[in-house]
Length: 250
Figure 1 (spheres, rainbow, N blue to C red):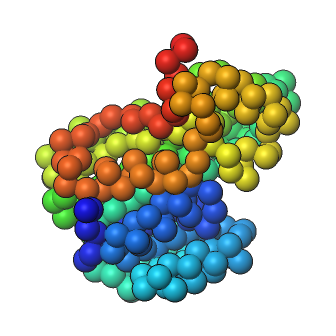
Figure 2: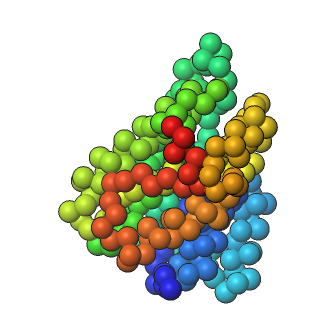
């Protein structure tokens, strides 16, 4: 049994999808959870209520992580409540799904800032609160290594995120803090509904996945939970793929 009692966890983008599943899973094992959201206040409130109804502790903070000043204000609030931070799950993500000829520089900046730069800024703020045994986990996607139609800027930002994790691992390893990425396959979430070729993506994933089903947010949350445990003390600087074997087909 993985026991996270006494641990404090920050889960960005924790109001829906993978972030919600991660927050629920960590809270169920005893962690006190902080989630962030931008637009979905009602969803965030529902996550807080669900965790509290199960006897857990959860706080929801609004912050657009693409804006450094909002991130800094968020950490002021976190430090008012807690003097330590044991787990950081960088899950919040955004981006524009357009063909390359329609992309603008602002689309690039937006995707990179929230999907990759935010992890660097969060790490800088979190480090003074983290002790040996701390965990930093980034959530990525198959688009970091594979070409997906209309995913250009998001995929590039996820690749930057995975590279950042490897560099952070080298720097933070001597402090006893592990840093890893969890890369999800095709996951049935609200984000997938924004893809214009959603049905095609789901059909191809079902065909190519040996285990015969799509990944669900709870599958990703289980991997995050493992990485937060003492069993994962020597798992460091890696991208762990949760895709039901999708990538086996090349």
